[in-house]
Image (cartoon, rainbow, N blue to C red; front, top):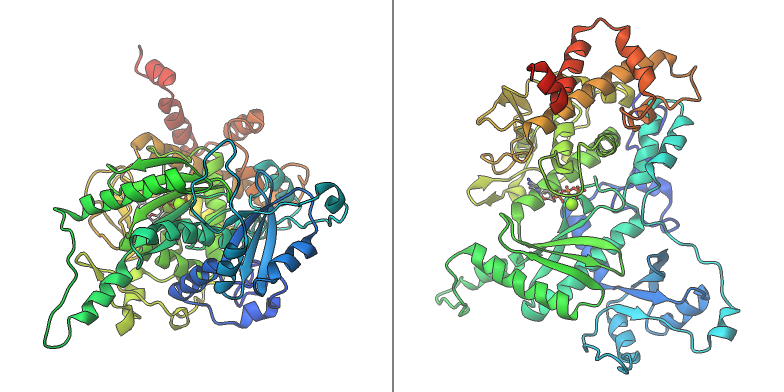
Amino acid sequence: GQPRGQGRPSSSGAAVQRAPEAASPGEAGEDAEVNTRKKTFAEVQTERLEQAERTVLIKCPPKLNEKKLLQYLSSHGNIKSHFFFENWGIHALIEFSEKNSIASLQDAIGVPSAAEYHVVPFKSRLFNFMLKNPVSQAAEETLLHLSPQSHIPVKELIEKLCHADSISSQMYILLNEYQLTDENIKLRYLVCSLVQDFARAYFPDSTVKPFGSSVNTFGKLGCDVDMFLDFRDTQKHAAKMKKGPFDMEYQMKRLPSERLATQKILSVIGDCLDNFGPGCVSVQKILNARCPLVKFSHQPTGFQCDLSVSNSIAIKSSELLYIYGCLDSRVRALVFSVRCWARVHGLTNSTPGTWITNFSLTMMVMFFLQQRSPPIIPTLDQLKELADQKDKLVIGGYDCSFVSDLSKIKCTNNTETLDVLLGDFFEYYGNFDFRRNSINLRKGKEVNKPESSPLYIWNPFEQDLNISKNVNQPQLEKFVAMARESAWILRKEEKAQQMVNKQPWGLAALLIPFGKSNSNKMKNRMKGIGSETIRNLLDSLKLNNPNNLQKAVGK
Ligand code: CTP
Ligand code: MG
């Protein structure tokens, strides 16, 4: 096989991999990123949350002199970093070096005059910047560099992919176009920090932290911000107070269940965001869900947000995926390609339903990578063996311990290219015995299904939960059919690829809906093939169409 990454630096894939902790361009050289130790999940979170607390967001006029804005703000303290972006107007994210610069700024600025509306006097870290004399001041405008906060459309991506020289480089191109940028990550943490300001009005010890794809290294530009309200620091404090000859504790309101407490807290904070939160719109309280949450849209940053209350197991899943994503550059490249592929073919959907979620899909990719020989990523049980005392954690009776220090995990000897891995991924799941077997990342083995859900993926921590319980049989069959078709396209195209340069090839060919892309060509391909698999596949596709099913049963 070829070296992994096709000639890219294989030590860490740093040329193509943007770690969440990476410094913004210019802050540190690219080489520094290669050499620095990978931070633990907790280190990244602490650092980012602290950074967000030193950050403000300013809506700016369309024409503006960047230098003068910065000069004006600098009178309140040193500006550590900043960037501009467009979202219904120009915004500037300003990161001060010191938190108290924000208080100084807040003291110096005015509240809007309430001529027509009454303004709610809640002072947040969202500001409007205005020119006193727009006509003369606009003349001083400079060209602003706007940092993009969304990815390019698939059509444009496909064009770019066609110019690549291998499937592997296609996959890295997709990764680079879709992954979260350092700027976008800063915005995500800022939203959490703004919500935290509200939460702390009630619970001064609480924190609001992001989880899910915003932090697990698998987020793409435009994905939602999952955040949760954490009281864990409060509990730690309580444990300390119990030492000594006396016991003292807070008087606290008691409720019959944790769920009820969660619902009450979310209800109040949801109302607060709805009534007083600048830029918080479409606030929806979904308190009767299995995991109660408040959904809202944050206009200034453009994020769709889901706020829940401390969900330690979900955070552990995020950390586990973070570790897998950091271990080898091929991991993220493969996940991004598979997720994009699934979205194009309608296998995933932004609304909840019976389809596979990105989270399940990511777990399926992880499991596939555990099955390689030698494996590309370790099993969860192996990560548990590497855990030290401080990594020990039991949540609700489930052992959630695993190693947090990435340097303790041995690198894989597997050198398979992404070209091979992508094709084999589709082949593997195209032929997986879903009727009998389930996917278990803890053991890294296919095991008998404990119950009859069409797709069974063990929750790595709550071992009696299936994370893909929502998936129904037709959706699973569609996934299998698409995987087979894709495996077939890749195998078929491998050799012809270079010659037919004008047609989308490799990954690009997989990102065009199969029905739409020259269906004649596809029919011709099918004709020439005597393979049982393909014929069965066609039959199963026909049977999935209710009209054909009627014909088949003779009605
Ligand atoms: N989660 C879980 N079990 C599920 C669904 C979700 O534990 N059945 C947790 C996971 O930690 C997941 C997080 O909730 O990462 C957020 O869920 P979701 O937003 O659906 O997935 P993301 O991983 O954030 O992916 P996406 O980019 O689609 O938002
Ligand atoms: Mg999410």
